[in-house]
Length: 256
Image 1 (cartoon, rainbow, N blue to C red):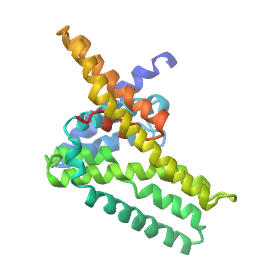
Image 2 (cartoon, helix red, strand yellow; image 1 turned 180 degrees about the vertical axis):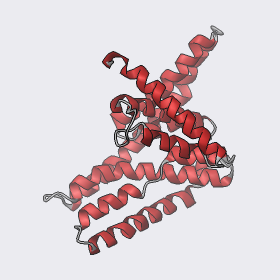
Image 3 (cartoon, helix red, strand yellow; image 1 turned 90 degrees about the vertical axis):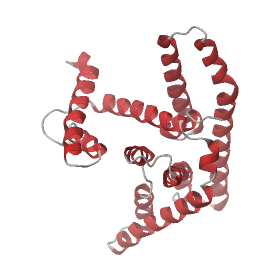
Image 4 (cartoon, rainbow, N blue to C red; image 1 turned 60 degrees about the vertical axis):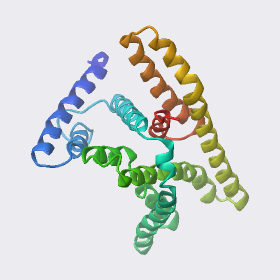
């Protein structure tokens, strides 16, 4: 059965998502609740069918990339820029409050500050995918509240990149102020490089490629071209700039 792991995982995962998504809908809940339960059911910690974890994780990444790419297609840079005054301080305050709210009780229970802060930072980050899915279901994705929510979670994604660079320095024995400042500077350089690369690709390279393919009037060519763009930029963003594939896919879908 080893050679069928991809097909078995794909089919089993879809079947579970269909069943639990339907149940969630019947219970007047968001279908994403059913999808999350389906993931638990086919996971390794519940009895019965168990999906092949590495394969399932890659399928999940593909789904996240395509979802965020599609959402990015409907957002203009001006729409998110208009809410930065709310999203940026809001994300910073919420992240700090959530981290402190968990780290302080854990410290009272005997934990060290370091592990408590790391765990607090982990739970302070909201999922852009889940947020976008729920907003789309409620038809609020393009309302002002939707713009603020997406801008908020994108800011949290950027903060996560900075955390991943700074935490090894701050909690190492040889950590110092110079190394922390260097990590922050490197984060901003990576973000600026990513945005510049996506803008250049979005304004000149991608339109040229798609225009050449559109001339053929072939849907069979156009669809793979869009998939290659979405997946390529998402993977490149992760490998080159160190950001999440979801953030890279979202930026890849942005009209510039």
